[in-house]
Length: 260
Image 1 (cartoon, one colour):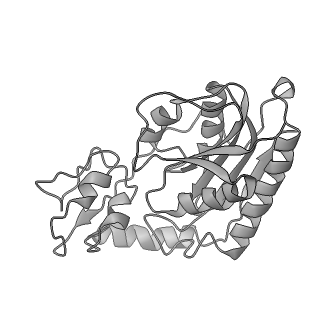
Image 2 (cartoon, rainbow, N blue to C red):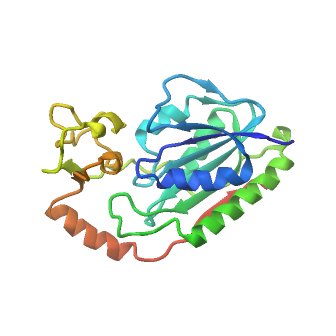
């Protein structure tokens, strides 16, 4: 079968997951329909066209897919067409995020032909994996996309057998990051952070503050603020930064998986 169209779906608060998926999808197809879940959350079911390959990229937060994204992925409906699953993580570990994404896609009637876990600059501790995806990462993303393209050319849903990826089907319990960003004196009250926050954890009345109970520490507010007024602060953050840099100093390389 040949697939001339692609539907790319991603959640990218820091911009790195977007960079990875676009590097991959641009080598697979030129006719691309895009769903940016940060800017336009899915609230209703979308039937993916039968002549389109679905490409989904998610960041890993504490080894899982961000909770707000799970329901949105479940709005993507297939009919045995192929899908490509991508996880982007900050050089610590993606744990069960990739198998969780694979399971979600298969549960919605997609056939996952390729899956990959790629590294990008950490969203909370940007000193870790700084500058990634780097030139070597982009080369490996291109190789991954090219291999997926070859698999698509011979894909048949009748012969599909579930892809084997790293992870535990009994997913780890979602962790809650205690570190939360907040605003400082540079805040001019533009409330761009209020609009971009995927969990509505910032109010227009108090844009410097963050609801610690609902915030998922994605950093969308940090990257959206034109005044650079939002960031992670405090003694605990500085302490955690030093420990995290030490424990995640090793240069990790992408991992890819394909159907047999």
